[in-house]
Amino acid sequence: MAVPRKRAVQRSGFRRWGIIAAMVVTAVGLGAWAVYSIYFTKPGVAIPIQQPSDYELRLGETVQYNSIPPTSGPYAGATTDWGIHDRPIPNELQVHMLRLGGVLVQYRPTESPALDDPVAEGLKRLIGRLRTEHLEKYCKVIVAPYPALPKKIALTAWGRLDAFDAEGITPEIERRIVRFLDRLIDAYNPEHAGCP
Image (tube, rainbow, N blue to C red; front, side, top):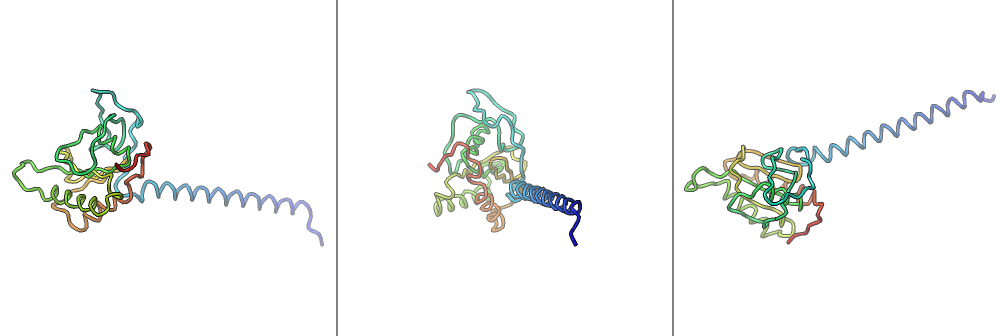
């Protein structure tokens, strides 16, 4: 017994729509996975990219950034050295270093220079050790004070911020910092800058 032509055409149409629906569901699923992996599996919090993010400031220009410390936006034409700094780095320079694929590890210094600062000393030791043992991997890291921090420690990369309080650098905090560095050094580097 032959199947009527009309039913064969209907089945073919249903099959075609089924394939299209499966493709749409797959595309939406892949898109959701991509968004999740880009924005939610990276450490820290995603900060909206401040525009214009590709604008090099002229001498004397300043900017109000959308986060403290900044994570994107207009940047200074100059750069600074990677490594450990004893003085705060201007925001515009920080942003340029982030554009080069860097990560900044900053701390709120104690109010009195005469007081010991176990967080500052611990961060300097940690980053100094990482840079000594694996310079190529951790060459694009800066440690510096940042007096205006609302928390004791702030880790910044392009579009990412992880700020938290700490009394010292415990093994748990060390793992948190190393994870941030490992995931975000060179994650954004439009200038294709290498290590110095």
